[in-house]
Image (cartoon, rainbow, N blue to C red):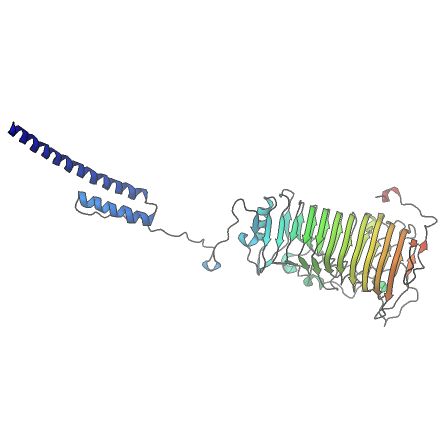
Length: 518
């Protein structure tokens, strides 16, 4: 019994020792396998795989083989190289904004903004991206000068309410670089809710275009009246007013900024300068607002209208400074419901309706209000001009609270407008009625009032109220007020007296034919 118990105790102890050895060997094998698996799963992370996997792997080889076997090293991690076309000194490659962005900076689309590189394609690419996103913004950043050729920012498939944020400067190339015969430089067409805003500048580099114009020729229909004191003057200058315009322009000169066929257009804050021709044009637009912006060109730059309106309605222009070589604001056929106020004009040719009816065309303009305007050193003040042979009508016009300073011809109606050396006499005319002038005050240097209306279709319902114009005899011959076939009323005494206005209505005012009705 004793021996059997001893045997059993020794046997049991030996069996425990064997089990312990087996368990110990199995535990080390599991650790080794775990290290190998970890090393494989971390192969994509070079530093982590080398540190942890390699150390545990060596432990496994040492326990089982006694000798450490070399393991193939993973390829070294390399940073992606730049494309051959992008030199390292240019910095990081600009990338378009991420999906979901509503702001599109032209610099992110490859624009250089150094004033020398052609950034036209970058502007096109930025617009293409902004066009797809409603209420997006295309950014032209400050402290950069962008050289941009003729470009169209076009709809009609763009999303609405896009903002063109202009804080930098856009300059046009030399005319020889982009050819002639172009109607516009920067064109926005068929858009809804487009806004151009910012503190930036659009520079049309227009001097290269102006130099081809014959400066020795008059450049407007009223210049025949403006005779320097050292010239001989007739006692009664011929009527109608004629000019000696050569009319020979060297190709079509482009408008700097044009909007066509668009709804709810806003332009604010920016400056447009040195345009080859018109600075800012709206054609076939509805709902236009222009405010707190400016145009700037020399007074002798030909045909550089500040703002040109054509076939557009519901227009508001205010708080704007316009300096140019032609009409500060030109209102052409098809315009209605135009309200202009708090505008400074000069140099330039004043604020004009027309010319209308050229080449026997029909013109319709109505409901135009111009008030609280200052005109400094301009050729004309507020003016309506039409060609003989036209048809249609101009009606419902108010010029109110106009301050003129050294303006040559403050108040003008000219239905014999002609931009050639000679225009033939025609009986058909654009009908003028309901033209009201009130509170027009200041100084003039040639003639205070010039009304030259059609023989066949006189101007009717022309009213003058609180007109106070004083002459300044400086460098031109002075004339008294002039009226021809102009009918209406003087609601208050005027200075100087405008006795040439015919009170009432003409005795035989032949109506326009049916085709002339608007």
